[in-house]
Length: 422
Image 1 (cartoon, one colour):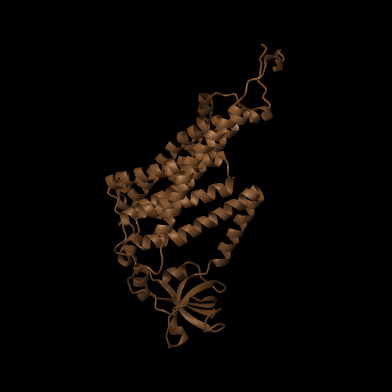
Image 2 (image 1 turned 120 degrees about the vertical axis):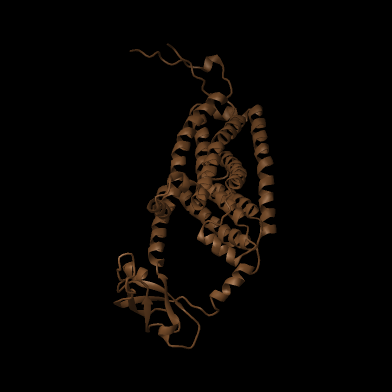
């Protein structure tokens, strides 16, 4: 059966006054949304940007006296000894501690040897000669052995090596886009460390801090990594919609499930230093930040799907284009939901093992304070990304159809395809 196909000259379409008018309308529509969002984000950054030392940081200074140093040293000798009390442990098992001789690499006693007492858990972790450790050196005039204590293992070199390998892999595969994404990630950490964390300690609204910081990150990261285009703008609008939904649903879920933020040990310690900190709001801020990555992933993929499908079949009607893109989106939703759930399950694995040891019913485990917080976080993030997919798809279809119109061509210019013979 013969089939005719419409061939369009891009130059002719681009010069069409109707196409140009629709492109201008599409750009104006995007600007009408982006400019207020960008202005609101900038104003929020200016008004909420913290300054000075917070009361919580001042309260913590008494636990870390001025002049405390954290030099690095290398273990040169280990002397284990039995430090368990008689009858210690469930079966009267003894515990093994150790005294380590460490060569200090920096600080007042650089290149000198000091002795550290290592508790059983540190010695049991496999410490041996050649291992580098971080020590705490208290200010004082006593002997060196009295001033130094074990603080942690030195992990700077392996982490730096992994970070370098990560950067090389990203740039080698994604090239300039990979480099741009690393720069965007650097900017995100600047906002997190210099704005969001100090702002929360300063007593600002956790929800406002989360929304303003997340908007600033997305405005820079998306355009830096993917370029300034209608496609990226579509993903940004979908991401902002998803963040709004995550915020609203997170507030409802947190209130309904009575997630107070007091279930975790870290939050209890925070409450001791910063009594004015809104722990329930902190949980909601964490939900907003946790949703950034998956929302960005889903929306940019969905926007790209719309553009690619349109380039392949520019004559495809808007409804069919939306349906085709949503078929891709549904597959992405399914895989992303698994990713979110398994990521939180992996992070909470030690806690889940404790519940397994206690042999508590599954319903009690899921509704317990610590797990309930993660369940609310997971469900809210999943609902937000699910709703962001059709919204991003609809925005992408509207923009791509408004800015790219297929112009009709005369019948004489249409060439019928040869019939397919079997």
